[in-house]
Image 1 (cartoon, rainbow, N blue to C red):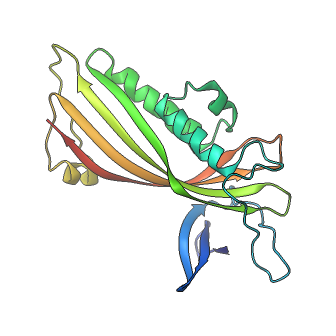
Image 2 (image 1 turned 180 degrees about the vertical axis):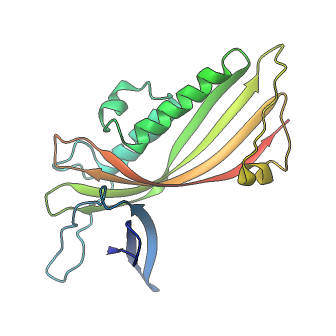
Amino acid sequence: MAEFGRKGASGWWQAIFQKTSAGWRAVAMSVTTSKSRPPAAARDKNGLATAVAPDDGDALIASPRQIAQAHARLQSTFGQDRRARKMFTADSAARLNADGRAGDRKALQGQWTMTVRSQPTLEIYALRTSAGGALVWYGIRQQYTMTARPGTSTTLGSTDRVNAALSHGNRFAHKAVFKNAGIYLAVVPKSPGIVRVPAEWFTQISITGS
């Protein structure tokens, strides 16, 4: 792990490297504010960070893989999965995003039906912290599907420049499918502490429909 700040900037950048047959390669990254900067990673005798296996939940509320899966379930259920919800702090990106999608669904109620399919990626990178917790980087792929209800007269579109480009400026009267992906950093204290997700890098991949 390499962590650095930039002159004149208040944030901190974290880059995760993995040793491969072709040398060290950057495999994950995150950006946090000074206030949400993650705790220090534990180091071995060579000064390298100590890795945590994806299914190793020792001294944690859950394993890195279970945390990524819980985050995905929270999105798919619009924040209604109680077990997953209890795993994260109220100000974590996991809960805030799920609650935001629940608000979107409510706003569309009576006109459009909204479903979310959320799935964590296979790649999960985790490091032990010097306090016995863990730092976990993982990705989530999502698909939002909006289907017009019978008699709906409203159409869906976007004025956002990126989304407008992805949708080719189209407005949809029957169905709209939004695909996106994000990379997240979860800060996991030693058990029984719950998870905060202070960093998210998110991008829209495609927008299609009819």
